[in-house]
Each structure stands twice: as structure tokens, then as C-alpha cells.
Image 1 (cartoon, rainbow, N blue to C red):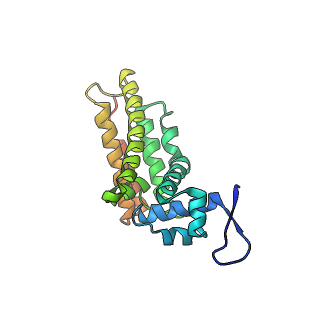
Image 2: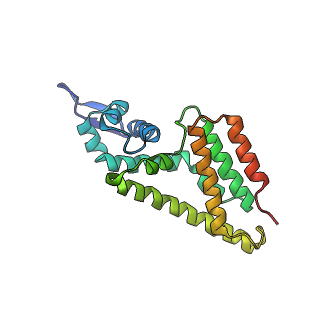
Image 3: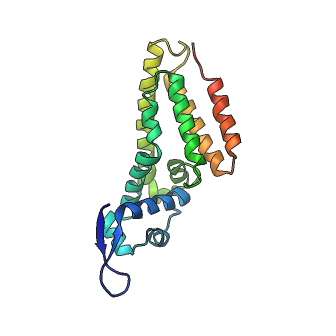
Length: 204
């Protein structure tokens, strides 16, 4: 793991800390509190570093959030990339819904969605954060739209189905699942949501 030297909070020799572990801790704070709800004091405490060390290793709070969001997408949302490889549109939806369910049921991680939490709690001063989250979501939506357009062209979806509307419906399900998980819904209740959604998925 990458190591960096950071000044000790008081006097003495510089101490070492693991950048990857510190970033994972920052992710947990942002995931739990949202961008604006995560204070610098809580971030530095959970990361086990001083404020000067945070700035030296990651930049400011916004830059730290961007790096945490990269980690979140890379490690927690990997199922979204693999979902596009499914052979059918329903298979894509199933991988996405079951992947999201597994993520919410992982007791080692906070409940809810980092993107939803951060965007819904953003004020005027954090518009750039909201814009970044929205941009990344739009990129994911575009990839899904292209996949469903191909499915429709191949006869995998009914002619009456609009890929754009179907993607919005699927994202509404994914966001609803994360919101319900954050509100205390049980694994059984979330599982029923996934199964019901898949049972009414449009097929030819």
C-alpha cells in the first residue's frame, strides 16, 4: 500500500499513514453523512490524520470527496459495469437490482447511496458536488440507454418500450431501494421489491 509521511499533530517525528485506508475511512464518513454533513473534524478523526496531512495527501474537502466517489464507484458499484454484459435486458436489470440489494445488505457498509445522500443534502455552496454526482449518473444512464436500445433492436424488448423511459424506471427502483434500506427496510422487504420488479419486467 502507498505510504506517505505526515507531520505529527503535536511535536515529534513524522508519522506514517496508509493513504488507501484513510480514503476508505473518508468514504464511510461521506457515505454516512453526505458531503455537507461530513465535517473536517469528523473526517480527520476517522481518517486518523491531521488537517494539514489531509490537505497534503488529498487536497481540499471537495477533492477528497471526488477521490472517495472514485473509490465508491470502483469497489462498491462494480456490479453496474458487469451488468451491461448480461445477454438480455432483463438480465441487465437483474444484475443491477441484485447487486444493489447485496450492497445494501452488507452490514460492513453504511446503508443508502452515496450519490443520493450527497445530492439530496447539497446546498448552494456545494453545487459543484451535486453537478459532479449528476454528471456521473448521466454517464451510467447513457450506457444503459444504449444497451436497452440494442436490446430493442434485437427484439429483446417490446416495440412499445422506450429505452430512455425504461432506464429512468430502473434508476427509480435502484434509488428507491437505497432510500428504503436507509430507512430501515429489512432484507426480506427489499428482496420482495427486487423480485416484484423482475416479475413485471417487460419482455417479448
